[in-house]
Image (cartoon, rainbow, N blue to C red; front, top):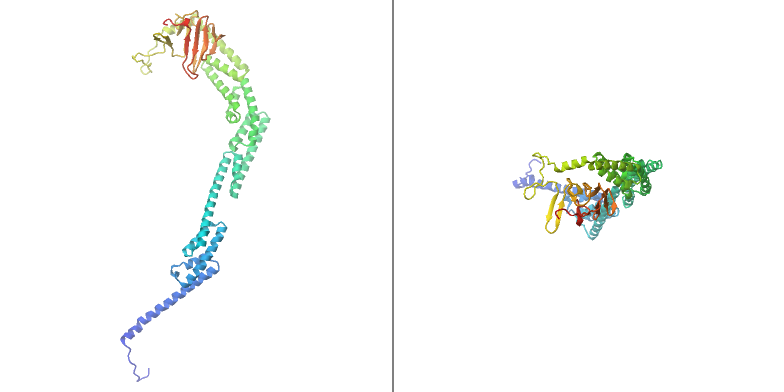
Length: 474
């Protein structure tokens, strides 16, 4: 400042404003300009991304909170919405429904969802549901085909595989199907070779493995008739020649064949009779053994070993009958009849008591009804029939009979008549016979009764004596 020139001082308020408020306003204005320029830069970056097809980047920039309401950003939003709508349409055409719906959601968030966007969304959602339904059907078809293949139902499995739309999964099951069919063919070839060599059991084992592991096919069914015929011949030969151990081994494979050849099930019945005969022989139950051998002969046909066994059993039973008719046998029956029962220990099961408290034992019970005659109730499995007045006879008949003329044996649900003297059933002479309901039995010349069973499954039976053979109390 030049010396001697006077410059008036500025007011204090002006100095204050110059130092404070006017300077802060300038800085705020500067910041506003800077932020505005920064928004323009970001809008320019969003515009470049939109023009270059980077729609996701453009969407992120234009949806930033500080750009909402910006004029230039608002001008770009409509262009971005159209671009997103176009991309959603391409996704839908390519079957990328999730991506298409994501772009439509972005259009909605931009506030540009018009009729075209709503129509496209409806079509995409419909097609997505249809594809989900197809996928579920495809999954069910795959699971069904896999179950059939794993269960060995190969032909059914192949038909199910053809319904699978997914090529990769279809090829997966077809490969597994081919492997199983190849293995099944190998087993069937081995079965056919064994059958050609006469090894029936080995052939059945190979065939059974092919069926159990890989299921029935036209090839396995084609071999059934040959196997069934060969198995029948082998089983009949083993039974006829008495090779019972071979028969038992063969029948272990019977179940698989019998499902497709039911006539073979008869050999299971024959093997069951063999086991029953073996048990009867071990228990020295020769009556049961004879009955079982007779049934077995009906199944086996001409079998020398069965005839020889029956002759041996008849010899044993004839010897037993002779002993029973001897004085020793009569003495034994008499002794057994008059002998008192031994005392039971305290912890043994006591006999059932009647209404008056008296114990009931297995002795015959005479039931007398006024005007209706009398009935004799027997509870044990053997009823001895003979001349009235003889000790040890449960059914005494006042006729010209042997002292012990016959027995009736109960075996399960069956009743057998065993004659020790002359006897006929339905006018046919018999020594041992299975009684049936309505059979007319004549012992000697005048001991007559009719055998009755209430039903085929009944465990009880009734002997109706002829009028001239009534008991003494009638």
